[in-house]
Image (cartoon, rainbow, N blue to C red; front, top):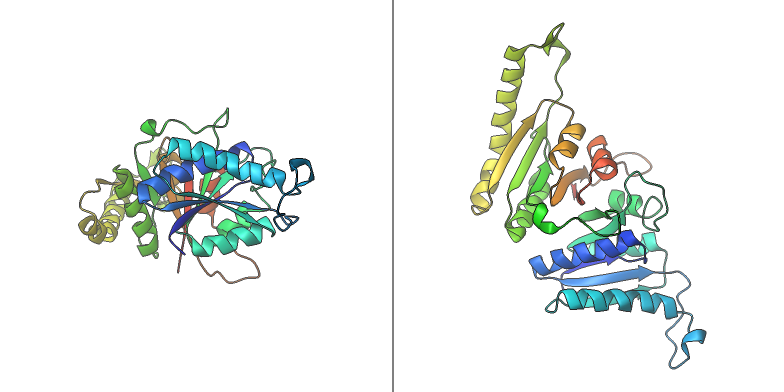
Length: 289
């Protein structure tokens, strides 16, 4: 199968916003856009029946309407529809394994009304073998103008695995021709806290050490992507808070999760949880070993 960006489509404002975001990204990457709608009751396609007797009428209309809009916005983009007779979670996990990128709509911490939020999107994010992007709709069902979102932000822990995460972040920044901000959040230890605030000698040493570590991690990627303008950002606060604050107004926030965690069910760490629930920009979750 040719490389695709897959969007989970359910007709909600969030999934339509995700489809528009996915179309932009597919065009930038030179990939096909696949609009996936999963419905367990989907019937075999009838030969010729009137609309009122077609069990698949609304599913077809949902996909075709989105296709028409996106083709009008992106005349050169290949947009294909895919109706699947399966549970949405299973269909999306299978599609994610075949896709360069999977894009889903999200409501963050707002009321759970979207088909893809909670019951569907979180298990897909936690189990997918390839990157998944969650896109939130602004009031009115649209994303903020892309011109105002002029950077990609990636959250890093220099002591952890980062190759898959940085490959995705640098490639995305290069495709968008925007700067990449690499954020390293480091909590201030107790011994740095004094009655009047923080011991500046200790915090300066922590910052210097963190910046050196971050620079070492980024060096080979700067060489691989010389056209990407990279800004390193060290913040003396929790990693979760650091990435959410740094991503305010960004085009995309990129965070990582381990592919295989011990335990009966996949687990999303505190940084990913914070990014998904509190980040206002689209959030890419990249699995890594």
